[in-house]
Length: 207
Image (cartoon, rainbow, N blue to C red; front, side, top):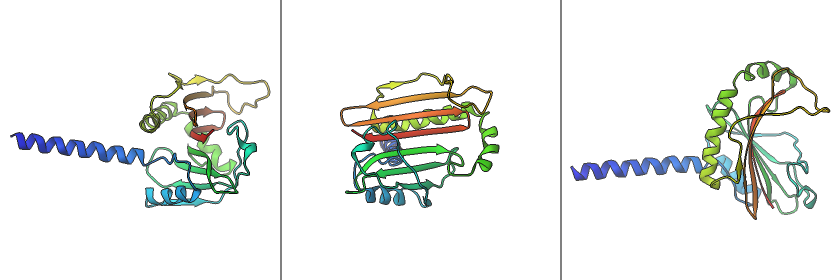
């Protein structure tokens, strides 16, 4: 009987460890050469697509933008059966190929045309609960990597419209943020829901 209990216990431990490895292995958070991130993306899933897309950073998202010559990022689309499609963007300095900023974006039709997105926005605008559920799942995974956040919103907050911000919908826009910060890194998980943007984004950079 004891041997059976011991065997069951061992199987449970192995199961938990294997689950943890799958979760931890979803995010690349090392400040390495961009080639390491490339190899990571190739190893994490059997079907990953490299996207050729021009993308830029602004000082508002990466305060150290003026300190480096930032090359066009490596962008990947991970093919899976998740609720939202995940695109990963790895920005690196041109001179040494060192990663400077990483963005993980869960968003449908991220690089599609306005015409393709317009119908999708109408459908997604009715799925706030699903987006919040997905957000909390991702947050839990990231806490396994980064620990307890420095700050987080308890619930989605309605975004107050600024006078100079165009509004494309009569429905409210919501946001939800979680921040991890220490002396070396700054990480933010952000949900934007409304006004033609339905996206969860995790950004991570080194100070």
